[in-house]
Length: 417
Image (cartoon, rainbow, N blue to C red; front, side, top):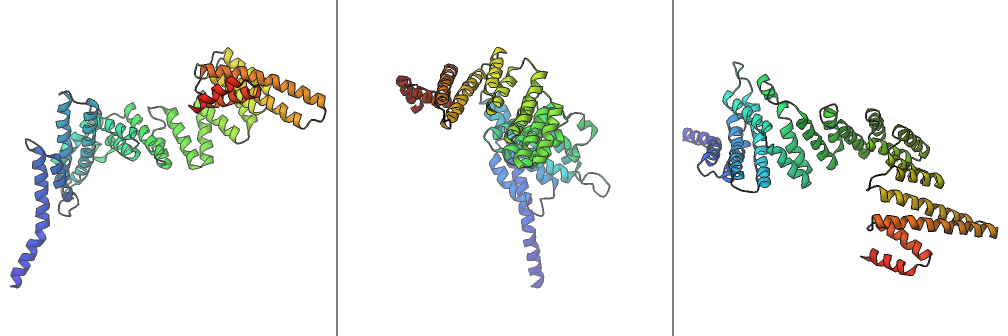
């Protein structure tokens, strides 16, 4: 009786392992059948991936990887049958993304040396290597397309995982054979995808992780300026002022004509109450690029903030004389309008505290003349950009001041819409 009980117990203990091996076989059959059922195959294989008797077997993971591999091949045939190419490509990428993860685990287990120092399962290792090589070098870059879809839908964690699963294939330990590496050059695309993986982390507010990726590619083949910008901005978002400034200064040295680094440094000075330093920087850039009207515009803004209105007007006018871009032109006219308007407001404030009525009348007259000049330029902005709400509000205020009631009402109606 006791022997029978022990026998039954042993059989009972074997049942889960037998069941999971059966699931592996079931998954393989569902995948390789004439009419594959990929959903059923995935359902069958999942328990085997965590069962103690099957989870360390390379073949288990190979079978799991084959599901996405075969599904991708099946989907690819639909492209030539008039389907939605982009949607199909992204579905292929999703299948290959899943498959690549499983092949990675299969190869990792298969590469473990046996007692003779050989791979535990050379067949699974070879198949996994070839599959991953195929995913990495595929002309259509399906996994990348899948990552792009996730990125565009703001699933930044998913996009990061897809991008890095593809980009790190050449870094996998079992892919370091010379013949394999020769077929997987780390070209511009590899660096580009890692950059977008870093951007995904940045947009997901995981700035330290974004910096880590960027540090690994900042001297690489893709957009070194953009990579350093991302590092710099990440440190700013983290509130690490020391590292933000160190990288900002580094960017200024490496890319002295970069509008992003120049603009960021100017803003740092301005918001830090260092307008003098900001103006000195802009003057230096203007001396180096005298034909660049954009920096004359920036200088005008700085001078306007410093209440050096006549100099601001002159700088704005220089920007117009240098034919700034059509996009910037309304901003330049607005800057001129603001310089006149702000000057007028300052004179009004001065008149408020003036006791000499002759001087008060003089200040009021000068202010009125400046408001009229401002009106002229704000109307010009309206011609160039009629949807600028801030400009319309300022215009309405000036129309009210000059009792131009029809135009005042017209602007009010426009703002209401």
